[in-house]
Image (cartoon, rainbow, N blue to C red; front, top):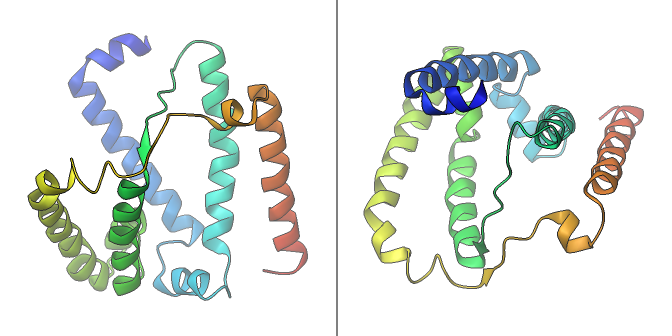
Length: 185
């Protein structure tokens, strides 16, 4: 069934739209489309964003690897580079610092009617994407390839069984959430 969905471009568009709406709804219900919550996270006074993201990673990690175990999905680790991480981090960080939203939360905030997200965020995303597309040819064979590193997963790097790494990471993340709750953060 998944192979047929993968080949059906119209179904992919509809599913992408539905999952995007669901994602935005969940971001809004989790409170992470609120500018004050995001600024609180950046100031380390409100950990709602971290809690929502960690919860998503905890559920997603198990779900993805179960789907992978049963042969429904494949993982594709990609090579990376220090240059591409620095450029990506700068673009993300500058946008976040100027507006207080990341791309996912800005789209969710637009859905709630936040004009700052619409005018500053969405316009900024379009301008930034256009600018990056314009300078990408100059960056791709120079800066973006600097400091290449291989496609290595965490279990491969640690030379441990995948499920041992998943269990350990899940325990650390859940433990961190428990500590945050214990201290009322």
